Length: 532
Image 1 (cartoon, rainbow, N blue to C red):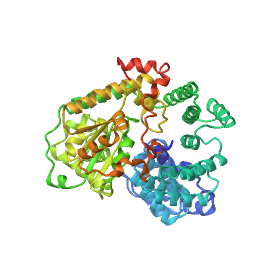
Image 2: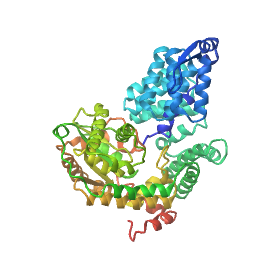
Image 3: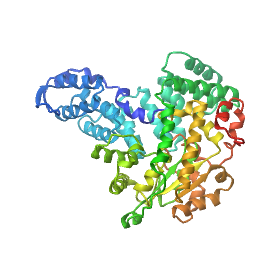
Image 4: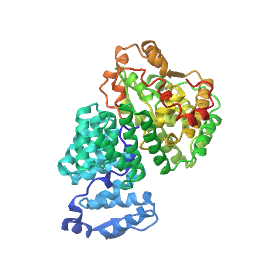
């Protein structure tokens, strides 16, 4: 999960957010649009048409949600008429819509070969570099974009995000402040800096209250501001006001997300049915000698980023962060076999060779992380995929992060998530997910001995013995750097980027009790005699 309010939604809309400059309406642009282009689409004979007509056809496809059909048309258009800015914008937007981040990167690089100062391409490529943990390159690209459009507030926000993930907090705060100087109502920057400035001054607090309560911004943006106000309240010890602001933000967010709670709960039971027992799979010689992935599993706010920070402080471990390589590897195999089912319904359709292929594809796509011999993967859906991991990557190590349920769920409820985690905005739904997750994790533990449980409270109380046990499970020798994980200078692209740069603290242990009265719906739904 990104530290930013944007996450993958920013990547999908990068072209739309970036200003396209006056070139799009210039005579040069119009002249390029009149040049002929030859396009060939499936099921149709090749056609020659003006670039403007190809653009119009692509626009109609996008408007009718036929994005997959629009992409090859736009790829042909931009390759033949690279001076046509509108073509690049549509292509970047289309690739973002389908989540083809590799395609976004390639299209942005191709665009920059012809239009090296094109802000939409600079911004898109910067975001892709950032997602791929190439923060220095991402920063250089966004710097170029800012030189082209110094008054573009969103570019300064993106600049701050990159710096924040790199741990350069003072510079990041300056970028967010610059964004707000240009655009005071920029909800992204208001949220992104909220865990850095602590308590707002009274004037700004009141202004943000008015903004959150008004209809000037979309509901999602207003929700972000309510959460930022909650952070200010917590810093000032105004806990009742903090909860009220969080509750208001959560209700707004929940009102605009496409979440089917019953469908989500069914998936947990399906995972148990699909993987009733741990498979007896012996790693091949190549798997045994090759890189070892460490899958870090658990609900959001359960300590997954902290665990990754500890492990990646070891010189033999590279942090992968919240990578999507495993679901992508599965998707490639399913597409090749023509299987159109949701996880885990398709698991029974695969052969042993199919599972091995998924593992091989995964290792191939994560090759950049293999340098030290071990690497981490903390995709937030990993806790559902333990059965899949066991069958496709038997050499993997699986670490499940656990925490006091009320502390874990309060940590989720108090947090704004830009994408996904739709169950975190209502107390009862959070409790349902905890109960379902608890059943699933107990099933994984009962069906295999290949799991290490990282208990948050035990880690806080006994850090060195717990970390030693973790390293022993993974197969690594002791390294003092793991105990001093907060000194790790790696870029952290999750919501805990600020927190994991600090030493261990018990300040979050039993914090939920501060809000016990307001959290009764959650507590009662958990059906625990003693949640403490």
